Length: 82
Image 1 (cartoon, helix red, strand yellow):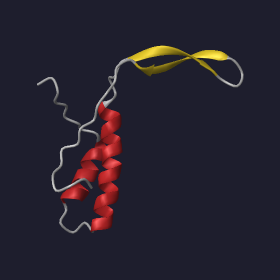
Image 2: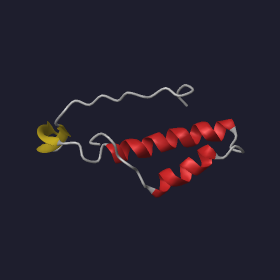
Image 3: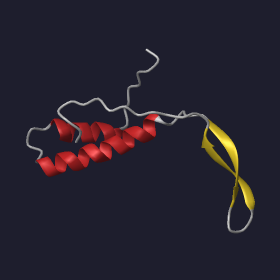
Image 4: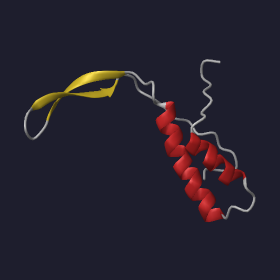
């Protein structure tokens, strides 16, 4: 499966345990879900292609990086977005 990635990051594993625990209060659940989505976004975008772009800083011109391709994120709604 090309579009499947198993994330074994320690923070994801810890947060998943918190989300699965039935004793987790709703405010903590929402906070952890938000944090987990940020970590997942970093992991899933790790291999995006970059392209150089010329930028002007306050001191001089230099080369920066931009995403080489457009990306689209589509959430899967299961019981709504956290």
